[in-house]
Length: 116
Image (cartoon, rainbow, N blue to C red; front, side):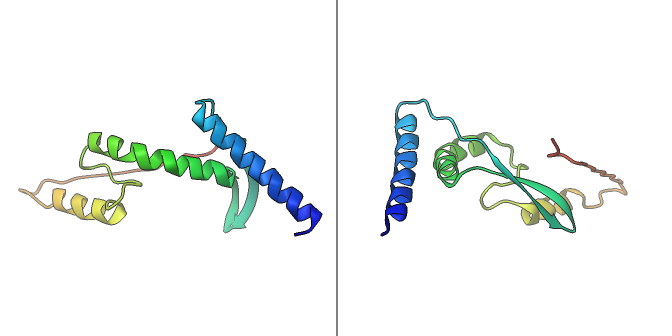
């Protein structure tokens, strides 16, 4: 390893060690988001956390998710393991079967839901 590579490695180690200690001492705060723009059919602004903050996020999620999911109604689908758009679609079709010519209407429009 060159001197610069060793320095970078050591800086990363210190950063991870600081995150670990902040978690251990209950003073953890995620770092700031970094932002960039991509152009796929239209301009999109992307915000992302650092790698270590994503690891912390997933560790917390693995503990809390089962607790929260138990409290959700059966018709909650988004981002829940073994559920999703396909299961939602099948359940919706089952509920919307024609019973004595009942008619249903569903309209949904969420525009720029995540816009700042």
